[in-house]
Amino acid sequence: MSGATPVVWLRNLVPTDPRTPPPASTAATIADAAERIGSGPVAWACEVGLDMATTIVDQIPEIGGGAEQLNTLRMGTESSAIRALIRVAGLDDDLPAITEEALRGDREFVRRGVALDRVLRGVRLGHARMASAFMRACATHVAPDDRAPQMQQISELLFDYIDEFADAMASEYVAERDRWMASAAAARSEAVRAILAGEFGDTSAATAALDYDLSRDHVAMTFFYDPPRRRSDTTDLLAAAHQALTTAGATQRLVLPVGAGSVWAWAGRHRFPARLVLTDHQPTALDIRVATGDPGAGAAGFRQSHREALAAERSARMARRPAPVTRYADVAVPALMTENLDAARAFVTRELGPLAEPTHQARDLRETLLQYFDDESSPYAAAQVLHVSRNTVAYRVKRASELLGHDVTERRHALHTALVLVDIYGDAVF
Image (cartoon, rainbow, N blue to C red; front, side, top):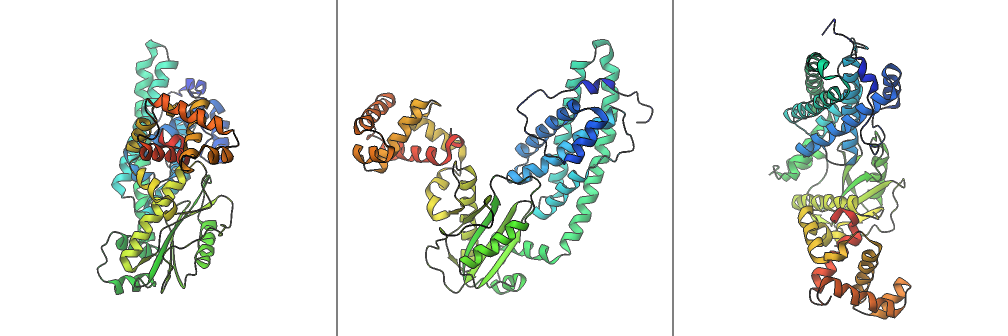
């Protein structure tokens, strides 16, 4: 929209929530924008970008997928909000609408198999949130008599910007999909996804497509970062995958990057022991985590072990104290209990009642009661582990019964299960 009056009041914008996390965009993007319009407006745009990303993932979960994927999405939404801010402020009409950060996310959507229509719906949802943020800011910073023309100008500028942005996203998606589909990695990825979906009826054809014998035993693994690395790639994860497959005794291996900060892998050999133990295995870096399924035979075992590895990964990502290696066999029950997280939270709240309160007293009672149950209701054994007196354990168990309104033995199994879930997952199940 040429000839528009510069929107000078945008320089007065500041974020509304001081708890907004640090920007996900590159330092160069933030510094360039701050030099143009100021650090306050840029921080406001980053807050808007976070809201855009959160809304998109809430409405279209497959665009998320994990912390690394959310971080990549935030890079795109933040840089988009910053670019729109510069455009609306009239500081540079020649800047392209699309940013390199947004294009990076676009390419990852292709690799993760997110359909173009879902990507474009995400663009629409995000930009609707962005437009609302600009209008709210206008209502706050512009006098009532001047708001109507300002809002009209902002609306027209954002319409042009969003239209150009969506066109660029669609064009890059199609180009990247063409490049990706032509690559050998894409062929392996498509074959794996077809096997996991049960669409490969001919095992020999799947074996040929993957150069990996599906008729053998398999142990599936997933590799990820904890805490997530900003703008993470898969280089270190690939190295960790090959190291773990060697430790597992694989005679054949299949390794597949599935987006920023995530790798799937399978170890294959003629026979694995019923329970593969990798407790002594240490990944190549302290922030790399490994999740494994149990061994399985044939194509069905390939799928089942992968489902178990994903469940173990989900459990590890939620856990308060994630181990370097999480085996499905060790977390199967809590993982199953938290597949429906809302139901798990309701269960914990119902069973613990007042013991679920976020107080030091409630925490002490939960920890004591859990240890008491783990030690077969022995106050002496629990006291030894907790480093308190036997009388303290007895008092806390009695106090827990009083708060619950019934003896702790009445619903012991359910109560014990709720305590285990809290011990493993903490606030995630409250």
